[in-house]
Length: 370
Image (cartoon, one colour):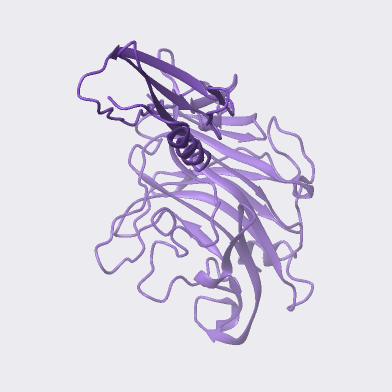
């Protein structure tokens, strides 16, 4: 083996200064027939030929052995990157980090626990149509018309995402859209809607997330303006449109923002349970204007009961069995109506036909027990 000169070491030093992760140095000592191989790893690791030392925060490994052929071969050393170990979520949360969610306020059955089976956090800039449709269940290519003789025509353009929330915007539509479904045959508002309905009713597409039983919650900010009606509800996934039940998680008249109507319709929607005992009554939950900030609305739908929640507080419960409580898959609908027949009958219509308002939605989640 030939002697490694100072010139060789200087070249190695220059090479090491160009590397940020790995330096390998070989030194031959004449007379002892030994080979020393040094590996150095670390940011800006360098070998200093004048002092024979390593610098730059390097760590070293040395191996000695007899020289034979006079050739020293270098093999790059690699350090395996450890796989991050999933960490537990904080107290009061469920899931596995980084996918942690607040646990629902509803208790799980004995021996069971909650899991998040569906989550839309609206973190993008456009609606994820694999999770939500901007139309209702009866979309045959022209999205969806109004409900209950309102003024609105639902259009995908009215669902807008930014800064981590979805904005379901209701604003004047010009020129108006002629439809017998709208009030006085004219839809003079356009509005936003999201649902887990099938994207189209005429092409065999499936419902986006049919589910049976669970706790459903959305955090939203609704407008307290007369004429704007907030609705967060559930229907069976029935392609014949024969909806035998309906769970109204939330119905809010903008001109009466203190009352959160919570209702269950069953037996082909011929019977109803209303949690609210009249106006200005929210069961066990406070009567106040929740529109001043974001508020969490939820419902716990199980085989023997349906319970409603506001900001984690249980407002009331309907108790039943397989003959009264829906036991098949359902879909979720979230939107605003404009001047529907309920609002007109209460005298809570739009004060002006040029107003624009939005329902802002932070998330939509479905928890189920396992």
